[in-house]
Length: 333
Image (cartoon, rainbow, N blue to C red; front, side):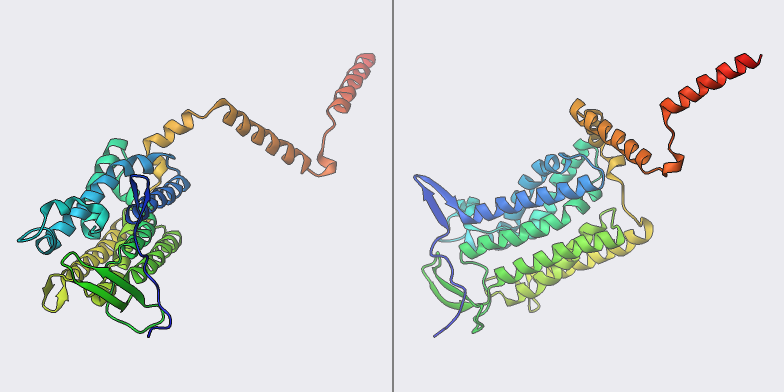
C-alpha cells in the first residue's frame, strides 16, 4: 500500500451550465499570458515598444497550436485516430491533450516571423525576448497533462509518485503509482527560464542566442523525461522518436550558439530596430510630458540646492549691488 503519492484529479473538466471549462485549455491559456507578459517586460526594458511582443504573439500562438497538433497527429495519429475502429475526427479534439512541442515551436516560429515582418522587427531579437516566457508557458502547460492523467512515467514507489486511475479509449483500465514526468518537465522548464534570464544578463545574449540557449537546455531535460515515459511511441534503435529529435535539436542549438556568438557578439538595441518604439515616444501624452518637465525642473532645483553655500548667488542682492556701482561710477565722472 502506498503511504504517500500525488493524487490525480478525478476530472479535468468543470461545467458552468452547458459550458465546459477544461483544465488543459486553461493551463495553455495561462501559459500564453505569462509568456507574453514576461516577453513584453524584457522587450520594453531593452527599449522596445510596449505592444510589440503581444502583436507578434497574435500570429505566433495560433500557428504554434496548429503546429503542435500536427506534430502529434503525424507522429501518433496512426495509433490514436486512424485505422480500424478509430475515429479520425478525434484528431481535432485538442482539448483532450496532444500537442507536440517540436511542431509548436517550428510552426509558431513561422507565425512569429510573419508578425515580426509586419512590425519591422528582426525575428531573432523577438525570440530572445520571449524565450524565458516560452519555458514558463511550457511549465504551466504540463499541468494540463496532470489534469488529463496522461504522459506519466514508469511505476515507482517514491513518495512523490503520481497516482493514476483512468480508463483508456480501448477500455483498458490503468491503476497504479507512476513517475510524475509532467512535474519533472514542469520544474525543469522553470529552471530553464531562470537560466536564460541569468545568462542573458551576464553575457548580453543577442541575435537569437538567448532563444538557442533555451532550446538547448530544454532538450536536455526532455531527453531524460522522455526516457522515463511508458506511453506508446515510435522507437528507433532503442530510443523513442522524441529522444532522437531532442538530440538533433540540441546539436543544432549549440552550433547556433557557437557560430553566431563568434560572428555577432553582443545584443541588438530594440529601440533602433523596433519602429513602434519611436512612434510611442512621439505620441507621449501632454500629461506625461508635463511630468517629465517637472522631473527635469526638480532635478535642476536639486542641483542648485546641492551647491556649496559660499558659491550660491543671491540674485536680488547682486542686482542692487550692480545698480549702486553704476551710480558711483556716474558721480565720479
